[in-house]
Amino acid sequence: MTVTIYHNPACGTSRNTLAMIRNAGIEPTVVEYLKNPPSRAELEAMIAAAGLTVRQAIREKGTPFAELGLGDPSRSDEELLDAMLEHPILINRPFVVAPLGTRLCRPSEVVLDILPDTHKGPFSKEDGEAVLDAGGKRIV
Image 1 (cartoon, rainbow, N blue to C red):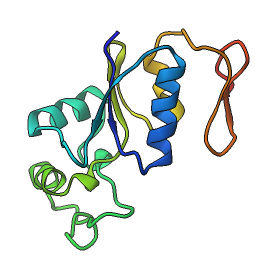
Image 2: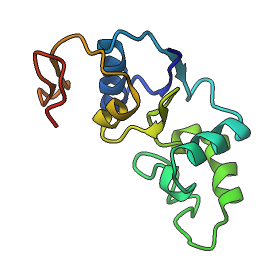
Image 3: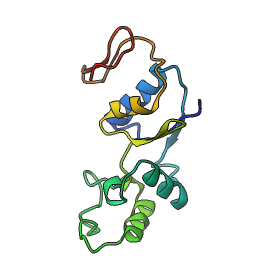
């Protein structure tokens, strides 16, 4: 199974998502999107496949969102995409693309919706929140 995660190693949610993928016995393709952002076509496809609007896929916290005036509702999707490509930190994360679907994995356990049920035992997030029990079954 080919799984790709658009990952920011500085983000706890992204690290937890990556760890859950690996707990399922899958070694994903890891794209550090701040260094290697997706193309416009890839970004548009991920957003559409995840069932999101461009505005739902943009990150506000810790980004130039406000200073660029991206909260203005008159800004078009094209303008938002332009900003996301120019400033990849505006791309919310982590996006995961798998044969079972594409998701913006916030919270991180959303990734479980698109992974096979092959988890190798318990899993807890970095903050200690249990997500999978000893049998690899979802708790949350």
